[in-house]
Image (cartoon, rainbow, N blue to C red):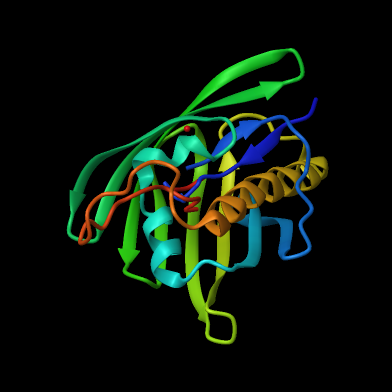
Amino acid sequence: MRQLLLLLCLGWSAPALVFAQGPRTDAPKLQVAVKRIMQDALHMYEIDASGTVQAPLPVVWRILTGYDRMEEFVPDLVSCRVLSRNGNEVIIEQFGNARFLFMSRSIHLIVRATEQPMSSIDIALISGDMKHYESRWELVPVPETGGTKVLYTGRMMPNFYVPGILGTNIIRGDIERMMGAVMARLDKGIAPRALPSAGTDIARTGAAVPPAPR
């Protein structure tokens, strides 16, 4: 049985997190490492991923904090909506789909995204279909090209069965697929839909924008 893990992003990016089936995205500019660890008597998966896009930092930030539009480009994310915002803290609800060969189930998460403008987004689980979930999106400007380096780290464990060591490869494939979709969206820069007027912080989700990991 194959389970593919897709973030979210951001929630978000984050991120929220969804499980799905699909091909891996192996882009030269994308690096992903996943390992299985033990923390607090619980096996979980630790993720480190990074890649570089041509989009400048303000564009990347706008996309990654546009949580209400994340489902437009994050694979298998059905919906993502902001429940509340208080300063730099955003509560986000996400719904996604999990498919296991011939079986399917829905995934529901509520996460808290803590934003440090133009720098990072930390995502923590409030409730949902995970035993443990935490992630971080970090953005670093690349002066030489005018682009942005995007880093994603996280620790997670779903509250349903993931097949041990095999799960490491499955989750790596899912993260590569999710990050590939996010990086492609970031490289597009301007959103295909009309953007809000200047001064509006939330224009569109972008992976993450990684939010984290429907």
